[in-house]
Image (cartoon, rainbow, N blue to C red):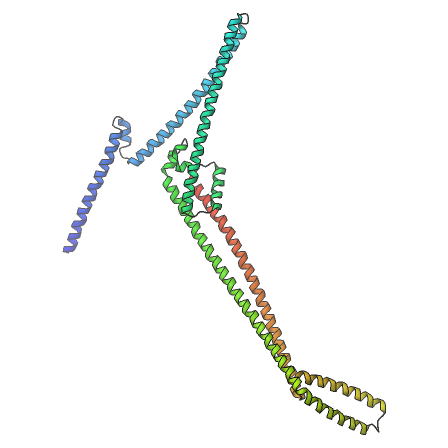
Length: 387
């Protein structure tokens, strides 16, 4: 309870102190306005409840409107004076034509007067042109200042040249002057825009930061695409190495079979020679009861089969028929397995290539859409600033 009472007492004292400071600030503001509008009672009452900033804004707007009115009146006065000069010259010309019988000295004087008036008019035009040239030179200098200032600010927030080109194209198409935000003294009505200068810069910087975040996201997507590309490439390389190893294994098996065939070739030929001799003897014994032509045909068929059997034995390195059948069956299964593995690897390779092309296409789309979106955001930011 005591702590709560102490806290309440402290808060009351703090509240009283803040109220006192607030009343002093209000009195100070009123004192500034009273001092500024001391001799203008009506305006003093109108600005009494305003802050210095609001009163200054209203006064700037009034000064701006009066300046515009003054410029308009000056233009009207200048136009009237030019028209008056033209009327005077016309009057002098008509007067000279009406007094055609006057002495030649008067005509010469009037001619000199007309020439002097024409000379003065030309001098006035020359002075105006020189004044406009000086004004154009000043505007050019201010353009350069604006360009340097914008370049510094854009370098700080890392804006790309494409975004600067988009901004300049938007400014040129909408006749919006960006230097009116930075140098209020260059234009005829910049004071209203200069009041919101800091807010405009903050909004532009916020939009540029958003664009930078989007660019970071695009860079992350690019890194992911590159990593997936590297993974696909490494996987493809692994599949190629696996195929190469399997090919080497097949060649090694074939070479081993050939060596075995060479080792078993000599004994098999000896056994085949003995067997052929026995077959010939048996045929000679049975040929006495058979005609000569069927015996020759059987010998040819038998020799064909023996040649085929010898070739198979040389290729496989075995002498048993059952082993030959098992060997051919095993080779057929292995061949089918290798064909299937080849098809699977080709399908996987095609999928990886398609995935690579898709990732490259997505990367290009993201890159171009990111730049277009950044330019569109900058243009929208400038439109919102003008609005």
